[in-house]
Amino acid sequence: MTAKTAKTAKPAPATKASRAATPDYLRKILTAKVYDVAQETELTYAHALSARTGNAVWFKREDTQPVFSFKLRGAYNKMASLTPDELKRGVIAASAGNHAQGVALSAARLQCKAIIAMPTTTPQVKIDAVRERGGDWVKIVLHGESYSDAYQHAAELEQKHKLTFIHPFDDPEVIAGQGTIAMEILRQHPGPIHAIFVAIGGGGLISGVAAYVKAVRPEIKVIGVQTFDSDAMKRSVEAGKRIELKDVGLFADGTAVKLVGKETFRITRELVDEIILVDTDEICAGLKDVFQDTRSILEPSGALAVAGLKRYAEREKLKGEQLVAIACGANMNFDRLRFVAERAEVGEAREAVFAVTIPEERGSFKRFCEQVGTRSVTEFNYRIADQGVAHIFVGVQIASRAESDKIAANFRRHGFDTLDLSNNELAKQHIRYMVGGRSPLAHDELLFRFEFPERPGALMKFLSSMSPNWNISLFHYRNQGADASNILVGIQVPKNEKRAFRDFLSTLGYVHWDETDNPVYKLFLS
View 1 (cartoon, rainbow, N blue to C red):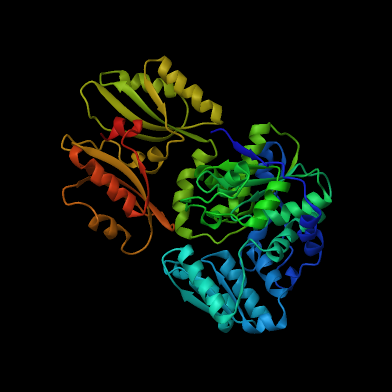
View 2: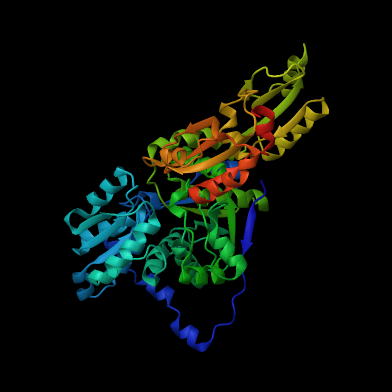
């Protein structure tokens, strides 16, 4: 996959009035009060990753903060800036993750009452963590099924009780708190640095980092990293205005933000050098990289910067440069590690996955194996299904991304039709576990991939809303221990009911993809 970037647009010249209204972030960062609760985290040299990339790679270890995330810095700095009257009235926040823990710990330290609105779907482990951090100073209010529902309820409570809202990213004091990370990096690494890589969700972290770095060491590149399915900041920078996403991916849930902040957009557009997009497999590979060098396990968003660093170094063919990635969080759901382990090899370009068609005749299987040669086979799925040809799903260990193309070309040169599935999401999530699942009875079948929120009743909602005329002809569900599950469904819909089926999809409310024309479906299932 080619690394994609978003060069920041050149902002319009600042007027005298706008300059006066712009916060002095250098002063704010230098005077931030984060160290009442946060600690100066280590800048760790990544020996293994440095050797593999040919550059000196450093991890800024925000995963070692008391709440296992950088969010504590901004939350506390904002709350510490409040007046005594504001602290007495109390604060409110909406979060189901790291920000909630930061607010809770800050409230306990400042002895300030805090209400934290969380969706009813929040895992109990996160609710318990917030309660543990805040003790009697924190009241948790569960409302709605999504962050948006909880946020709206928090806004209502803010007005009703005259509380101060602690925004997770779009606030100058929060931004300044996060900016202290950059101050520490430059103090800990006084020599040349080519680039600092920063995960972007709402933009608070990269805004603080860029504000400090560009004021003190403007020659250092500040590079943001987002996922392909949660790229609100990249799209906004390209458009020159904030763009709200309709849906966001949930694997890297800590950075799954539909709309970035006004202030964070302004700073990012002005100061950030570029934004790189990475996919789920690259994040999984980044998680593995950090584990191999530190024996620590980050959360997916925490490894975003590492994944972006690797893509950038490969794209630019960097050698001998000093590169820093901010490991920004480690609130990992343990059950997700099954998924991470499966996908890390593809993300690291150590495995290529192919669909290969061979003649269903004696000797063809041996001829195909001869072309695989001495390479290590990571996966091999086959089932006889046709008198003329056989379709094989095979995984092969590789040394670089370029090797995947060479292997596919070699298969084709020897008469084996080949599809490279290494970047095919349907193949990696479902088909590899379902090879051979054909049926002559599956007429009028449509194939859809759905992303379901992992909560009680979601599946029954889907099934009960379907027309009784539509038969489920295929169903594949794997719970990866995440906030959402991917489900593959084959549905038999008569041709005269296609319009009703489209209406059903539009009202269902779940993210979905039509995979009926996906070539891997045609090879193995249709």
